[in-house]
Image (cartoon, rainbow, N blue to C red; front, side, top):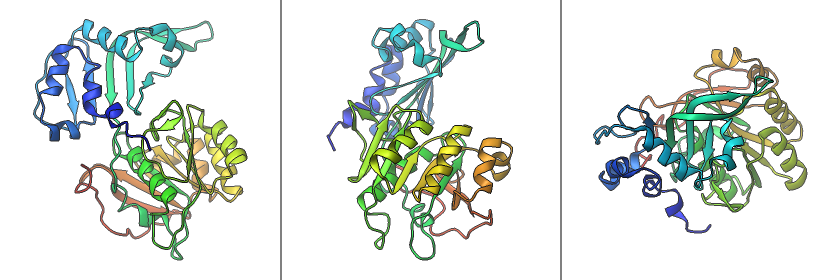
Amino acid sequence: MPDLASVYDVASVAKLLPHPLRTAIEGLSQQSQKSIEEIRLRALRPLEVIGIRDYARPLVAIEHLRHVMSAVTGSSYYAVEAQLRYGYLTLPGGHRVGIAGRAVIDERDQIVTIRDIASIHIRVARQIVNCANHVAPLLLDDWGQLQSVLLVGPPLCGKTTVLRELARLIGNGELHPKLSVRTVSIVDERSEIAACHEGIPQFDVGQSTDVLDGCPKAQGMYMMLRSMAPQVMITDEIGSISDVKAVLDIARAGVRFIGTVHAKSLEDLRQRPALRTLLTHGAIDRFIFLSRRVGPATVERVYDRQLREVKQIGSDSVANRWS
């Protein structure tokens, strides 16, 4: 893997900010900078940094937001206008820049883009080796065979970071001593799992892993199934009916699936028709619920395909490894 750590470290993210806000970030200790998860800018309100407690809180001016938008779009707002209708941009290195402001609607009541940006949330992506050690045993059945797994939890609980590490472990044959290398396909719609730059993953996602970057999940899963013959399919943020249908078809093809979904409980999943299908069709062997209760990626509960609670294996937290 190429050594492009500077692409996705916090220092490179700070360079996107105007002077007063950049100074607040660069003035932090290296340890504090490593703990930053999000940098949130809201017009006429103080800077907010998620992941640390003590930091300077300069007021965010409207021109500061314009500066950041110019930096993240390469001074070509119209070149990314179509992507902005989804409410975010993905930077090299996998950082996600979420935006909010005035939605521009067309005659079909579809969002065309977002203008008059009033809020910018920069989610800092990073690879944390060994952060999934406590989750890895939960992917295996009693005979040591890999299962299909859904990581479930609210935003910012560490799902994508754990998913990335699981891809690395499986693709390198390091998940378990008795489990050999598996061929992995990642469909990385938002470029957050592998952080591809010119097609090359900037994060280590495993030697036997292939990545389809920037492709819609459902379409991408079918493409990878046909073209790459994976043993394991990985993608992030399952949610639509088409996503679920693709997961079911993946299971019928004998391919293991590992993905994530936003929810806090089984009841949350049941209330969403598309996801409820995953609870009833047996395509998922384990549902692993994560939180931040005692640190990022705390394992709260684990259910099998019959939705019976499974006894957890190992530690329930990665707080001592999440650094």
